Amino acid sequence: MNIVVCVKQVPEIALVSVDANAGTLSLPQSPGMINPFDAYAIEEALRLKEKLGGTVWVVSLGGKEADYALREGLALGADEAVHLMDDKFADLDTTGAALVLAAGIKKIGSADLVIFGKQAVDYDSSSLGAAVGGVLDWPAVMYVRKIESIADGKIVVERMTDDGFDKVTAPTPALISVVKEINEPRLPSLKGKMNAKKKTVAVYSAADLGVDMSAPAMTAASKTLKAANPPARPKGEMITGATPQEIAEKLFNKLRESQVI
Image (cartoon, rainbow, N blue to C red; front, top):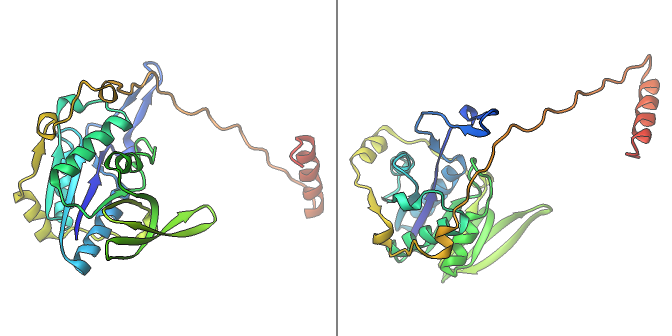
């Protein structure tokens, strides 16, 4: 079983602020952290490897800071790491990023399963995994909470929905995104951290991947025009009364005046 896990290096969200005057984001100077949801993807890949054997790759698209996320994956137990890094990859939108990641997965070759975390905590779009599945022309199942089985050229999973879950069967190779309900991620061991420092991370540029950066999908880079804090919430109102009945009556009248009921 050969599994590719796509991981992302994201800023520490608690340290991100908005410069209201300039209308721009102020990012922390720290290298950031691995996207929290990707930890569940790595853990599920490692559990599958322990059960079925095979190889786990971690792949990241990003600048030099993404090396941290890749070595975190290696420290946890991934076998190989691939860094898709090129100045030409800056400011790609979802479609462009999907094309580059798909090219990286094809470069690795022979993958049976690709796993994403359900979303990245910086942009929260939850769309990149499905887009990569579309580029690869593989079945893509999002929001997986449980992998029931992988055998005989098919994968059976439980996919979360608003009303519960669906059981989905898809042929492999396939792509899934996972939610945090799927497992409890392990922590890296000291031995794993030491080994991760020694590992060689393969670095692929646009030329290495054979990606045409002049294609329309690659030149339609997304741009942030202005950033602003969300408006402050209106101050709440405390309804008081001498008795619970009086409070309930005041609340009822207030809701009716506001046409809520």
